[in-house]
Length: 361
Image 1: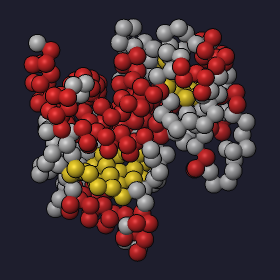
Image 2 (image 1 turned 90 degrees about the vertical axis):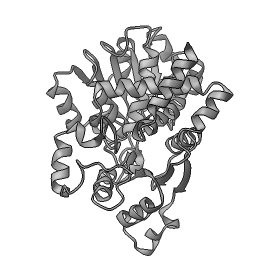
Image 3 (image 1 turned 90 degrees about the horizontal axis):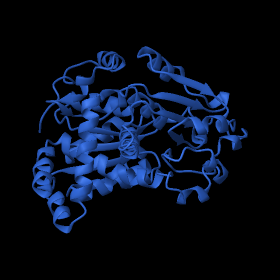
């Protein structure tokens, strides 16, 4: 087991200070990810490497021989999937990636089935998991909890890697990675993501996928971001501050139909009413932020429509059959991206490179 010395013996307050200053190397070990906690920890070179690996894994996995090769890469590793918040796609995506790479898994998907029901702290629960497993994939309703666990474990005697699979309303880094991969694949014949116009629509105030993806898009020159939402659900100032810090162009608006013809990609989101303290968002009329079949006539012929899912009424089912609707491809991309991350964490990416090189020769 390797140890991330940049986390060892650092106090919690110093850790938070370094995180706020976005010290990328703080989350890395010998040039590769160690803990995967926030979108801001990735630079452009690492994004390109992760996407490259995902493509290679995807292509290798198309044959029986390739699948057998992938399954023999990490059979010596065990993963704990600790999902203290409901999930379908993220859980199954990580679970499937583990299966493809031969990783053995265990899961806790309801804290009522763990010792937390007896009063054990979540921190102690995760330290228990670290005694049995080589890394922990965790989803938690508390913002910043994955980062705190990474600090706790790195200051203990078994500093296993932590992958943040969604924390509170603030971060969902692996979702942002698969979103970038989906955009990259969609624009691979149009010069890539650079220079594109991308609209975020819906509940932007509480959408952690939006916050994480917006941060990654700052790594691509001349991308303009549009934030389309009712005033009470508009994007937070921290995201706007990040855009302004690097001089990235953005526009805040509430006219969805006007925005549709202008952009190259639309990222739809549902109303996140699970965070309501009252029924405030359920009382909002958000129908003008829904993408209907009629809106396909306004969308550019080579634009794409994304959604992190689950959806409600914000995209008509009739839209699914349009070639510009890529959200089901987006779902599958998550399996390959998360597999690529695991291979990087455990330093097995070079095996993928060698196999792929022999395969294409």
